Length: 223
Image (cartoon, rainbow, N blue to C red; front, side):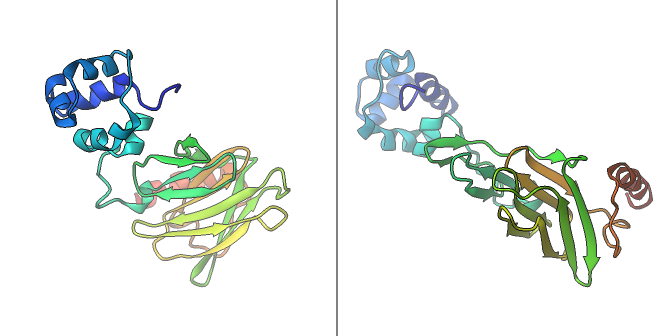
């Protein structure tokens, strides 16, 4: 983006708020010709107008600049719908329970899309008393490592930060955990559902295909 706010965004938000160019101009104290110029990319609002413009259009300044509107639908958010954002510059990890506009080091971050675990990212889960012992079969070099492990339940998140040259393992309380995710600094986010009848035992399964078959059987038995 060469400019700090686009005319297309202003027009879209104005129309969404059922305002004419003249009505928006009156509320901002500018001419309707100015609004027209902004929306046709023949001019841009002065930076001093960004705050009142965002307020009138019902968005934050960040949303106005980025062009990504965020709906306030997170009041009763479920932790299982958690989103994770990872900065490619500093490795900073940000967690959100719903939609968000997040920047780090000047970069607009997008939520990581979790993939199923595979042969190169095998995870082993064992029950040890009231905890899950989670181990990922993965290198932990300075160049290639697992950054974090997160265990999600409907109302709670347990997150364990891992470091290069350490162990790719974590312990989390079992309390309602339904999903475990982990992040590889090269290959991204991976996810596995904790399945009744498999992960509540005191042994793990070393073969991905074996586990998938057990998951299918568990779904048929337990729904």
